[in-house]
Length: 398
Image (cartoon, rainbow, N blue to C red; front, top):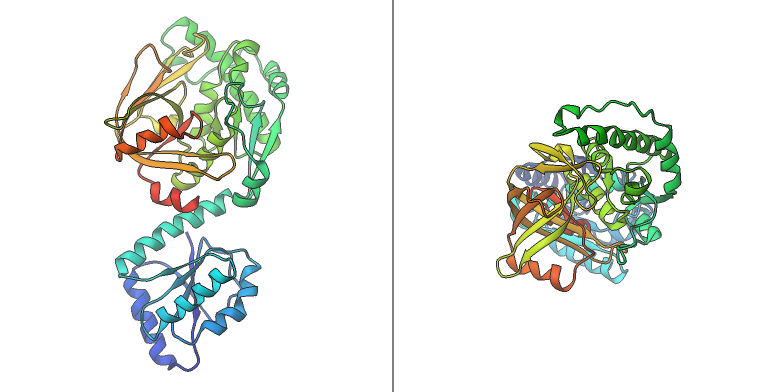
């Protein structure tokens, strides 16, 4: 992650004194940065850019530079201040001016520990936004018929996050599956618990190989697929394929759920892992304990896994994955980006009950009151389970 600190300094102040104060202040933050004095020509090319208001008397300088800065659309503007030489007062005047222009900004001021923590969060946000920019995601087939609220506004998503979403006909995938050799071998054959699963793995691998051609042909960084159509057309499931793609860094979602796919891509940009797309199966609103389940999970999220049939249909191959207990974040963004949900919890245990989708996770919310969201104002049914606590960064992004 790259952080650039651009300086604003009044010529009325003694340069030697200002330079000494700068070295003392920035050195105390304990961060890596590139210091750029007096020039903004490279503004917009880093994960995070801070404008260090070193002295008072800089308000007019910033106002004159603002048209140049806006060419790069780098909002909000982050004003760093040490609290010396009237830098805080100048920053407040600048921020007030930005607000009058309908622009966003924030003053970074306080203890070294606070500023360092805030910069760390903003660095992650900047890195995430740069990764999302110019990303292409595919929708293979339409969203499943039952996802009546899980639509998306493609233009809003592209304008806000830089993510392009393309529609791909399901028939194109089915034709490619037919062209994959029927004797293809699976690297998971030793995991098969019985002959039915062993035979189904061949079909699952054909789906994976066909999806690889789609990903390569459309230059996708992720996709969601109307996977239940595969049950009738290919007599199999996409669960194995999705688990593999997600582990390889290609976001792969179920049921044509576009907001879930987008949530997975944001999660991957933040954490390096796509996350577990699942739906709540049971909720205890009094304790905040929840049970999430689905029939696939990224292979790089689990310590071990077992192969079974797909739960609803009893055919194909599903995955029962066992993730390491510990901190998690539950996340979902709406398809119009107007709302999001991010709450932290603890993965208590993974279960393997026969009456649910194969991968099952019991999660205790850190804030038990947050369980009411699922019962009163949910963003669809699918949510993304991410290892670790990431609420602060996700809230900042959205």
